[in-house]
Image (cartoon, rainbow, N blue to C red; front, side):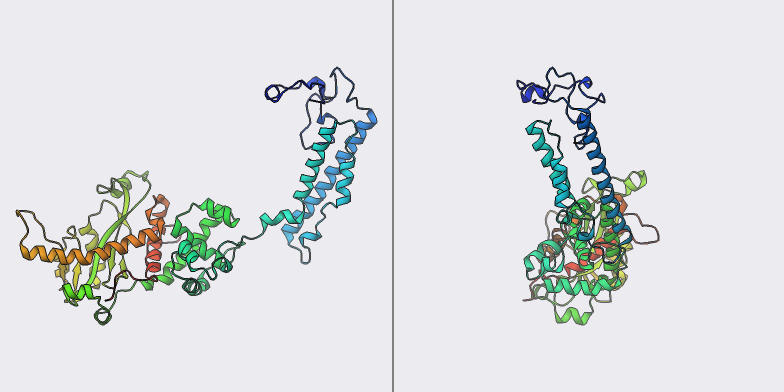
Length: 446
């Protein structure tokens, strides 16, 4: 307002007002950062002589602008050279940052013809620009300290919240069991940070960009780290999903199972579904649409021991697949021995297939064709319902502890990547199931 001699202008008027190009020497206003340009403020045909600029003043301003531009170019070239070649002994403090004397020299060279309030603006702009070049402001380019060992040390509650594992000690043991087999690409993160980032992704299902911003890496780096670590974690942790021997089952059979079925129960089976995006391929869309969930899903069969551990996890099948077909085709029945007993829900009508392995299937009784259940069937159904509730808790804990299984997963998780024969969704399910086996069991022993 002072530059154009219009003290009567208000903010509301200035919001829509513009200054004509005839008031500038070059016909247009200079950029805000080019403070030495003679056209940084209007100075022609203003109806007053407050801002008459002499030729000498114009030349002086242009010379100062040229020197400032050259100096900044030298600084940028030196920084790029350091980053590219990583010369030994050349630290940030060795870079040619402008000295305080040079900064004050530029500030003192502000033309005296500028109004006081504009001189103050130029001073603040120059100081802000130079402060951006100081080493203290480069902290945003330093590696993040999130999810490192100090972040979790001595705080088991933080470990449970971010990773789902019960303690920092178990977190360290799992990491040491996996990390030696990971082929790392060049990254600013430590291995422990990458490992914990994958666990946080599984546990909280946070978007890639959230992890990228927090760890100060790119979103593509998050994807690469996730794939490489899940591949190794799947291979190393899958043995934790173990089908127990009869001796192991007999020695650790919980009392609630002993009271109802003795030592006969080998496994309790059930299925759960995971939502996925709607596939573009019509055939894939039809095979993954679940009439039960009214959404496109993948279905997984899970086997739980009476002790409450996950002993079997199938591959992901289309949501349209029936429980009976999935049970017969996934391979779980090959683990049965003669005399074993399988507990299941009403939808698992696989008596013949299980009988082929000389085992027995125990499911709740049907009321079809009957007015009511017989007393024997009622008691049988009650016993099954009493112990099957624990299976529901295990599945619920799996989905609650690792919320990625509650999300609508993208369809590229279902496709095999180049050079691989296993889709990412199968690896995610197996890794989450193995990690759940490291937590405290939910079925009481006594």
